[in-house]
Image (cartoon, rainbow over the protein chains, first blue to last red):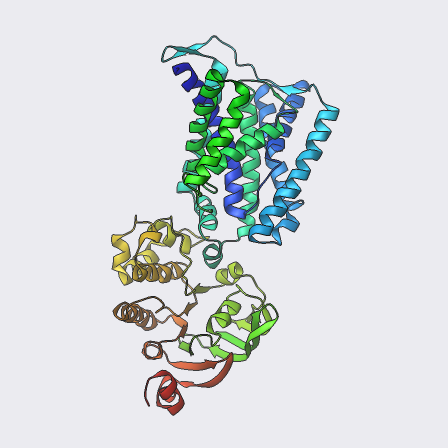
Length: 285
Length: 232
């Protein structure tokens, strides 16, 4: 049981970071990015290609992170332009449709051109004992990186003026404009950040299990479920929902079956909306 | 300092404010008075860049600002406190004030003078803005607006939602700011409050400026007296 919980936490941290990217973009700009999983996959592929080209691991990962950020920026500057002209519900719907379309295009291209390509980062060394359970080094390194990323985000949003400015747009966009903050600039930054976070998750995931070109859709679906449970617009919500759902997922897969676990996650999300429509710590409903 | 000419504005093609002309000179306090629905909020939101005008020529310190978005108007030195305040509810009083100074780091001198003006805020620095009372939120909204050391402070019905004693306290604070030389433009339904701090005023009715003059002239005007001062 402890092994399941620990594995659940490892998986859950990833889910949480994944959901963070999605929830920030929605909370700040009312945009639902259905191509989020594809950004993660594209970043993973860039790292794989870079390593194939001879780059050592660390620089390849950096290139992957930059790629993730660039895709986010590209999204903001091109595909989302028509979305920004709308507000409220129509904006959410158009963003959903356009990014969904983009996800099909990216998936189609990757699976056609590189069907067998995958990213897998091997962390050498034997298993390490945690609470009596032998944990693979890859899982531990992935978790450590994810936790450090969360810590970095926490410090950024709490203590930097840019972080405060971004939070203020999520809190009250008109109030933010009245103090001289440009919401569009903050949106661009958050999209770049969400792209980098997607890349971080892809890279850390590859330390646990290979990330291949078909992973996009399931990544997006998982991110969406965790985002909804955690509450749209809340990073802390994404963190806690990630851990909880990660544990539920692993425990359910171990006792019932892995195909059922996705259904259980969806049920958990549905239940959350019924009981607490705004999610655990949500801002927008 | 602020020169508004031929401003017409409204919603979805229908103008609610028509051909408004007025000005505010440096160091003055000017009031725009009128009843509910007169167009005061529409007028202010247009000037401050939250609403596009149908036509307008708005000059601030000689620079044409009509058509600029709200965030740019704010950066030019106009701080607008709307009737709904638009505070950041889940951020602390301290964070709200810090953001008032954006993009600059908050000036400790300015912060001290704001807290001196509103000591209640100092007691509640770590409290979330959304959990404060109406009066405290109004103080925070004005305090936040002051953090950027604005050239012009614009307030839309600061007495909104405040019990009479609190509204008077708010205007007392505005009076102190006036004494410090701040230029203020205020829209008010509660005319006696506005008159207590204003040098000049304009009467807005159904979107048109009907009357203008010094506070003394307006206070003596029989039409104003019967409509807004409750004098038969």
